Image (cartoon, rainbow, N blue to C red; front, side):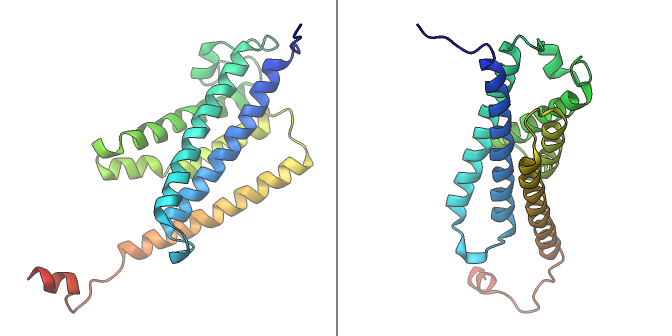
Length: 195
């Protein structure tokens, strides 16, 4: 006879939430490495893009497991409205609100990524720039709502936030350089071949 621990769904919710946070952090890191060319020619763009997309998808899957675990658990008794309406949860409303905001930003980023070929590039890029913000809102949610956050986890979280902040800064610097790059005075080989 299989006996399931009465806290099974609570464990599912906690563990899947932490895994979702971790894979989304990695997805943001791979996206920033890909878009900033941080490591130059040492990275394979196709492989990096595949890993970035995979991690983003896994973030959605584990977020879904997180919500399912919270819904199935009978300790707090979350409702669908608690997951969708900021501030409606009676349990740690501030922390849950950060989670709701993170959910909406995640849906926007993943939804526009799936529809990227059908959307204007500027719209996709503007929504995708929310990825670092998603990591921040998810981090605030994790630290405010998390019952497992200890000293070691806080240190790992701070190190991750610092690493992503550095990558974001590099990405913004490379974007600024590309937009302000002066046009060469002499025609390029491509322009000569087209003439």
